[in-house]
Length: 568
Image 1 (cartoon, helix red, strand yellow):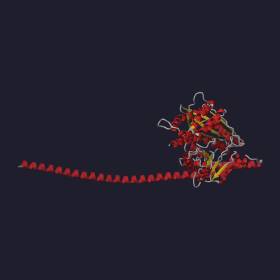
Image 2: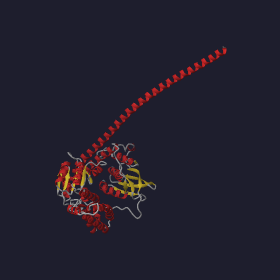
Image 3: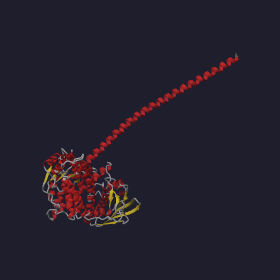
Image 4: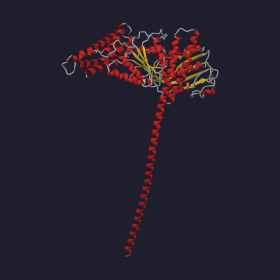
C-alpha cells in the first residue's frame, strides 16, 4: 500500500511539474506574442513614417526640380532680355564706327562700345554664377590646342593691354602635347578672366603667361597655367577670401576698377568642375601670380601630322558678302530696335531684299506666301516662338515636298543646351546676341546655298519614269530609287573626304557622278548642290565647297522621302 502511495505521490509531482512547465510555456508564449505584437506595431508605425517621409522627399524633390526649372527659365529670359538691347547698342555702334566720323565722334563711339562690352561682361558673370550655383554648368570635352588658343587670346586682349601701357608675353612648355582633351571654351574663359584682371590692376608694367608641364602619363598631362603681373598686388588678409563670390579687395572696390566680384569665384568653380585647383601668390605693391592646374587628356597624333594654325584675316569688311545674295531674307524678331539694327547690318553686307515680321505665326504665314533664301529667327517671340514656327515650317516642307530653307536661330538665350534645342526643332545654325557684323556675314555665307532650283524634284522627269513599265514586281521608279539609296550615302562620304582634303580633281569627278545620278531620277535640288561643288572643284576652289557639305545628306534624304510619296 505504501508503495502505491509512493507511486501516486511521484506521479502527482510529475503532473505538477508538467503543469508548471506548461503554464510557464504559455506565459512565455504570451510574452513572445506580446513582444511580436509590439514589434509588429512598431514596424507598422515605421512603415507609415517611411511612407510619409518618402512622400515628403518626393514632394521636396519635385519642388526642387520645379525650382531648378523655374530658375533656369528665369535665367534664360533674363539672358535674352538683356542681350537683345545690347545687340542693338553694340550693332549700331559697330555700324557707326564703319562710317565717316570725326576723331571726336570715333572716340565717343569707342566709349559706347567699351561701356556696352563691360555691361555684357557683368551680365555674363551673373549668368555663369547662377548656372554654377544651380549645378547647370556642363563641360564640353573636345580638343584643346594651346597654341591657337593663346594666339586668339593675345589678338583679343593685346589692344587693351597696350592701352594700359603694359606688355604681354606668352611662354609655353614645348613638352606639352599639341593636342589635348578638355573643355577648350572654359579654359579660355578662365585665362581671359585672369589676364583681364592682371591688366586692370597693372599700369606701365608687364603681364606674362607661363604654361608648364607638371607631370604626365601615357593618357594625360597635368598642366599649370600662370598669369603673372607687376601690378598693385594683394594684401595677405585679402588673399584668404579672394575666390569667394562678391568679394573684392579694398582697391578692387574703388571706382577706378569696375566689376561684380564674381570673376575669380567663377574661375574657381570652373577649374574645380574641370578637376583642377587654383590659387594666388602675391605681395602688396609687388604684383601677383594667379595659377591653376588642370589634368588634360592626351590625344594621340597620327605620324607625320603636325598641328598648324591658319591666321584668318579679320579685315573689317568693305563689307559686302563675296557672292551676291540674290534671294530675299525673312527676319523674324519682336524687338523693333533689334530688327532695325539687323536690317542695317544686312544692308551693309549688300543684302537689301529683306522682309520682317514680329512673331512666329507671322513668320509661318510669310514663308507660305513667298520664297526666301534664308530665315533669321528669334527664339523668344509672342504668340508663337521661333522653335514652334520652325517645326511648323519643316512640317510644311515635308508635306509639300519643298527643299529645306536655311533657318538661323538668332537669340539672346545662350544657356547650355539652347543650341541643341534649336537644332532639334529643325534650325540649321545658331547665332547668339549680341553678334558682330562679321559673325552675321559668316553665318550667311555658310548657308547661302544656290537656289536656282527651289524644288526637291523635277516632277516631269519623275512622272515619265513612273509611267514606264517593268517586267518585275517592282516599278522602274522603285528599282531606281533602291539603287540610288544603296550607292549615294557612300558616294557623299567619299565626296566629303575629297573636298576636306582639297583634292580638286577627285572631288570634281565624284560630284559630277552624283549630279548625273540625281538628275536621271529627277532629283533637282540635290543635283544643284552637287553641280555647285563640281564647279568649285573644277576652278580649283574646292575648299569653298565645304559649307555645302552639311546640306548634302538632308537634301538626299528629302529627295528619297519625296520619291517614296510618288511611288505610294
